[in-house]
Image (cartoon, rainbow, N blue to C red):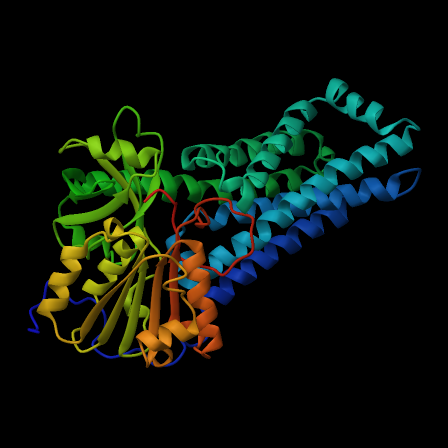
Length: 476
């Protein structure tokens, strides 16, 4: 095989060594978050009116649940604001992990507040729980909107669980999570108008208003304004739509000075195509080739939602791109041996990562598909393997029984599997199988890199506990 280069090398020419030193910037951000929580607790202590009378203790506990739950909800939103300095300091994986842990805790505390405050007031007025609930929504100002906000928060939380998520279209799931913002807005009005700490303490009101501004300001700047400005500055437009197979297309996006985006193979953007039907929704798709100064490429499989309409995109369509995001990149490798495992259309970010791997690195590519028609970008991969030494490409076409992904199979296919880095992209089952194999073989966690097809991106609300990944939406 010759050593012709098909794309610019972006990864370092030598394998990274060791773990990074302690990140003081991350520690500083964590300290700020802790100080914020301390400030919220301090406000509650100073403004507390005590626990006397029937239901007094329960009512006080409800107020604590409300204050801490609301603060954690703001932190959850801040985690998806994509503040550049915060993301660089903390890292995407940790952001995802914190997001997943804090989301359900915030929801649980808010729910506890709703239950406890009703029980406490019912005890103090010697009435039933249902009667007190009716009294709240019918006579207390801003409580009916607050109740509506709580219901919206529950919807956002419930639809984030794995079972519910698998039964919905991506667009439906995405819209339900916009409800969380509405819920926070409704809760804000209730909090400021009726919250006990704010009745006679104007300074407490000002501090909480500042917390909301600190949370939603960066969200509007970095998730709304910045992508629009950046996309217009780079003049991002659809250049061409290329059919890869019966159900898969590649979209080429043209622009100017795209190297300043500093995107890498394997990363993803949130793409918003400015057509009548698609302008309102953003879908996360991985780059399927390493970017250059003029073009970005994504490869999308028709899964029956927005991905189907993309085949009809016309050249010249304006594109708004948010990103790049993700750590599924070649420069995170630790060794000079790399195994790339792609499942179906999951080969697309694998293909882009391959562009950025230096020529001296030994590369094994395992392409898993249930049918030959699922071997997307096959010709490109074969061309790269022919043109470059040190690359071996193999297809695993058939059922899971024929090609079980476990430690035994992987070491049979790649005898030195455990001595290198492994990059996996595909369905969650494939990710889990490779991770389990790596664990059995004793591979360090920092040499196992994956990117799964699910909705558990830090951009969205997914209240499940799983291994952090740089993942995207399922509609590739």
